[in-house]
Length: 67
Image (tube, rainbow, N blue to C red):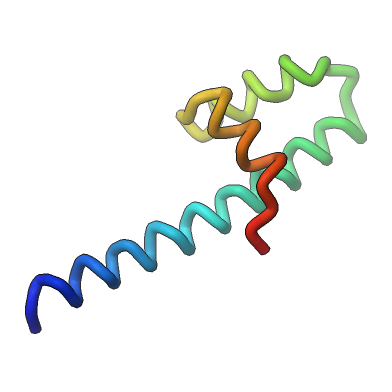
């Protein structure tokens, strides 16, 4: 197999993983809203720390539904 096939497979897997992570982020954010009194920014901070990603990435996941 050539390198091109590997890079396409890797890219597909990264996209799938990102889509699943974004779904988890949306679910976590919604769940936190149901059981806590955290502010919007506090929930963003907690999720960013949990997934080790930037606050901007969390906001994108919340507002860009890929499913």
